[in-house]
Image 1 (cartoon, helix red, strand yellow):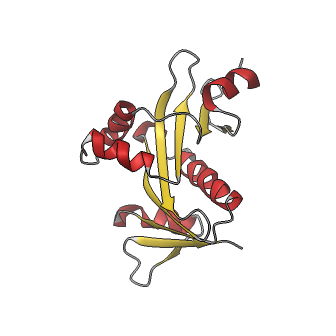
Image 2 (cartoon, rainbow, N blue to C red):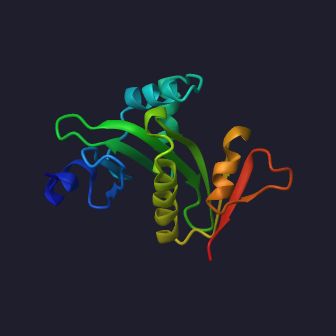
Length: 162
């Protein structure tokens, strides 16, 4: 049984539970829990991204406006299964980078939940415009979430505050 106190202790006050098709599986979104670089590297490996030097990844995380993790909850050892980060001024514009969901968790709405969590945080900051760059094979995913594609519809999409 999950308790709010335990989840707050592990993931911070602003965590959010994700609906999952498996009632025995708990997935938690958080922008407060620290991202372990080795877990992030394993996630990137699982989605087929090329490796980057950990010192550069650490620096990128430190300089990000927002870092969001999606964890498979285990009170002893939560596992990072999704990730996204944003850069920007935190007022007018932000850019979403490095959105990844482990292949075992794709197709169950976790990418949608991750992006909703990211946009909710950016709305709280009153960011007016958000852009993202994605591989051509996944641009349609963002279009399905209501993002507007750049004119050539190849890699870039935009979200505007209502």
